[in-house]
Amino acid sequence: MTEHEPRFPRDLMRLAFPLGRGSLVTLAVYMDKAGPSDAIPAITVAGIIMDSERVPDFSKKWAAALRSFEDTPFFHMTDYDSGIGLYEDWNARGVKQKRLARLLALVEKNAMAIVGVSVSLADCVAAFDHTPVETAYGIAATHCFAMVPQFRYLQQHPDERVIYTFEAGDQGHGRLKMAYDAIYDTAWRKNFNRIDGDLNVEKKDFPPLQAADVVAFEGWKQWAREHGGDSRPTRYPYARLSKSVASEWATLQRRPMREVVAEMHLPPAWEAAYVEVFSRHVDQPTARLTLPTWG
Image (cartoon, rainbow, N blue to C red; front, side, top):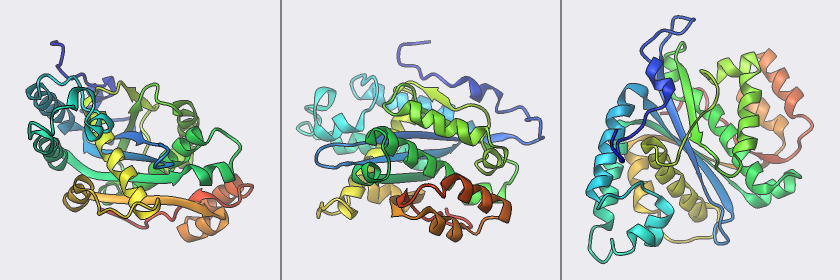
């Protein structure tokens, strides 16, 4: 394996083999977060839903693109946008937009869908006693978990399962893992979220996570335009991907959980479980789930 040759998660090695239920794992969700900053006091968690069979080819082409960018080891959207480090002279040389466009084209060709959730730190501080960054990460990711199974393809393929992958060691990962494990350990929630196995983690240089970093960053910037007082036009990458890839975005705002549960129109047993879990939380950041489908 060469220095820049992409790695693939061990989970992908078994995608061609049936699960015990007789279904195939065909989807993978790669998720990353963006924010916060002093200028944009919010966090966005976003993910790319891909057919797992396309991941190896996507990763090879992503890595090839980066090699053509003077052997850029990995793509980090924050540094790219700021024009620092490896990206310092890209704009002056006239290659900055062209190179990002090449990566966006790979996302457009390979992503089945994009899902993203944003939440302000102020709402998290008002609703919880925990560290706001970690709390925001956890609740935004959890809402993403709830949005993924509403994706039209999964609604049409009820036996499919999903592998969820996040960046290892990211701030707030511990709280995210707790939320994921709570879903995994509850049979009806595990089934609802189509979870296949433990939460998968990869290093930040894994190509699908680099792509998720781009999507999360653009969703975070869009939150500033819609809710954070930034009056500038929608950025080109967000506008492009929103038109070319099936997308679902949500902004969590403080609302009583009983109202949200009532809007979900869940089966009675599920509704009772949701109310039992969330009734002690009042006015926490949340949003309506799109039912029955999106994408």
